[in-house]
Image (tube, rainbow, N blue to C red):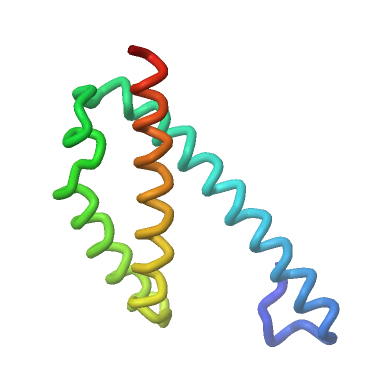
Length: 99
């Protein structure tokens, strides 16, 4: 994959952005597979699924990662908050379906 400065056209830049987004989506899919698997190791109560301390630690670290990558930490905290909330809902569905 080229560096952005090596691209010669708008189309080429967009093509690379699309390739990166494809990889990001694959990684989110892989992340979700681990989320579904982690339910096996948690207590089956809602508090354990929500894991507020873990959620706070993850969000703190994602803010730090955003800063390390010259990204807006508020935006990426929001993105990960939405992602985590979605995955918590999915974990709760899994637990409820196995009762």
